Amino acid sequence: MLQDRSHEAPGVPDAREDTARAAEPYSVTAEFYDILQAESDRRLAERRFAAAARAAQAGIVDVGAGTGIVTEVLLACSAAPVHAVEPATPMRVALLTRLAGLGADARARVTVHPCTLQGAGLKGEADLVVCANLAGVVEPAQRRELWRAAERALVPGGLLLVDPPPSGVPDTPTRRELPPVRVGPDTYSAEVCTREDRGLLSVTYTYRVERAGRILRQEAEEFTMWPATAETVDEELREAGFTVGRSASASASASANGLISATAGVGGAHRPH
Image (cartoon, rainbow, N blue to C red; front, side, top):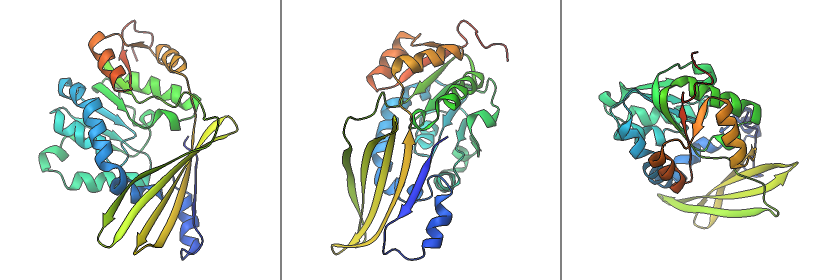
């Protein structure tokens, strides 16, 4: 599972509230995610998933739907039912808020699953499963369970598109800034730092709200990521019953967008269910 270690910087009131929130993954990040990353994530989702969504007919599964950015893109590009799978309550609150702003016809096509894909129990419901920003934050054993659940959710020949986990850990710590965003008199920003932690990758997001050059708030949330090479993920997918990159057109498009593509039920290692 995703390991989350949240903390609030000194000077922010009510440490008890921070302690309570730290127990829930994304309890800090959910507030800041859309304001800082929604536009870039939407453009990336359109580039990566729109073409496959337009071809989907049986249904689409968005695994790790988060605040619903990818879900919204999938709904806009397809008339098929969409399953939004999101176990983290803070992110699911934002997801449902996003869905509330859509038309009734779009909302009628969405099923929100407040659990993992394994827990959702979907069988033959979709011809497309997408995993964005997810594979790296799942422990290896659960990642293999995820692939098996994805294969069960797909009809034979259905397509899985995966944003792959990091292939390794950095030799030295890295740091980058997300583009700042103005909200009235305030500026929202975030610093993203990565470092090696006992062979795994530790990623810390530090969020700031500033007004007139003064920091009003500063909060941070730390995540653990499990690196895996492309060869490792390919082998896991094959063990789950997928054929990796079987469709030449899908494979070429996925590769160009930094994705792994795999086709379900070809060879039938795990069918029937």
